[in-house]
Length: 497
Image (cartoon, rainbow, N blue to C red):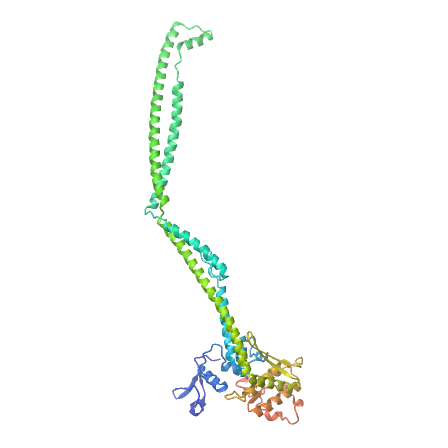
């Protein structure tokens, strides 16, 4: 394999008469004439198959693809007549075989173009992406689902727009919040202190009302009831005690009265303080209720922008879905028109198709004395090919279908100009084939190549040669051009066999 940038050199290129009339001429450098590989492939395509030098279609035949049906590369190339490697893309089978059969390969190419557009539309519909608001903005779904999502998001957007319109930013919002919190704490402290003052006032007022003076007679009656006689000295001292106790009671009453007055003043003052701080807090809370912080406004803006972005994305998806649906409708129409055009083209070239079908049948008849069928259909997905031989249960019949198809292509192209004029088969094509059919195939290829002027080359192991099955007039040895052995000199292009 060579890179596109490499060069193809050959001594014959230095003789200009060989390249006269070629669409691309060799380059000259240091006295040597050469082709870049890409140019060389174009030249070969033009010389062997008449391919245009500058083909602008994406899905078009190339020299390498077409020559692979004349020189099948590798074992997998002998699996089916219409492929030269396993699992070959469907468009290649259609384009390459329609070209080789002389049908409208452009129709097959256009079919693949439609398929690629269908794939693109399907991929657009499957794209998925979810934004931060949870809206699946990249799921096309249905128009009804998207319309419902758009209405929902539009409502969200309106609410956020209204919130932004009614939002007033207070520059010192955070400081005001701190002041309100501090006033609340101070109000709680003052309220607790006043509650204690009120409880203490109630206690002092109760004590003041219940405070009384004990009399001397009460003490005397107490002793008399106990049977004790008090002397005069004791009575005099009791009078002194009574006087002292009276003084204490007066002092206590004066203290309680003073405390009651103080507590009443303190309660009044703290009530005033509470009212003042409550009013201050109320004024600050009023500002906080009607205004907001700059951070809150910024966050509202972000949410608004996110929602608007979601709405824009949904609207875009609605437009895309409409385009997808319109595109699919257009493709269905285009596909139907292409099918009609392909059928007309096929009918116009029906003579060419009949020639290919007839040759395949003749080749099959020569090998198996049984008819063979080359079926070419134009269906909803393009050209469809199939080959059958009535005795297709025979061993090796699958390989001989390929042989009949390849020989048919060589027969067709021998009547064209330009033409590769060559068919090469490896011994793989005869694996499992009866010796009788192998001999008939070699004789058929020999007759047709001589009659039509193309070259047939087949590589065979000596133990596969069906010597006893050849016709008496067929001299196999006269067609042998090269024998390779296992010794040192018996190799081809450095490969030992």
